[in-house]
Length: 121
Image 1 (tube, helix red, strand yellow):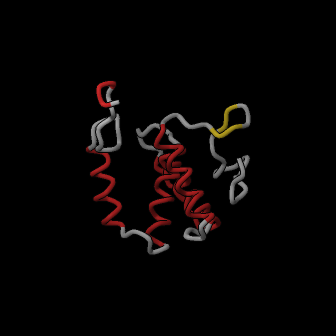
Image 2 (tube, rainbow, N blue to C red):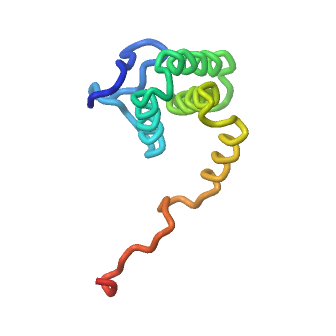
C-alpha cells in the first residue's frame, strides 16, 4: 500500500495493526481511512494538522475514560470531522445532520438501484 503519508508505527497516533498490516474491524473504518488518505493526497486536508487532532482526540478519551469501549477508529472519525470543518470542507452542523442520516439507514446495501435477476438477462 503506497500512502501519501507515513503513518506512526507506535505512540498515540499509531493505528491498530495485525501482522504489520492495518487492522479494521468494520467496513466503515477502512472507508474512513481511505477517504482521509484521499483527501490528504488531494491536498484538501493537511496530514500534520489531522494527526495533531487525532492525538488530541485520543488524549481527550484517555482523560475521560468513560464507559465507552476504546475504539481507535472512533477517535480517527472525531479527528476527521474536526479536520473537515477546520479545512472549510463541511460545516459541523452538516456533519451532524449527515451522520444522523447515515446512522438511520438500514444495514446492508448502501445504494438504491435494483440488482439484475436471472430473468433480466
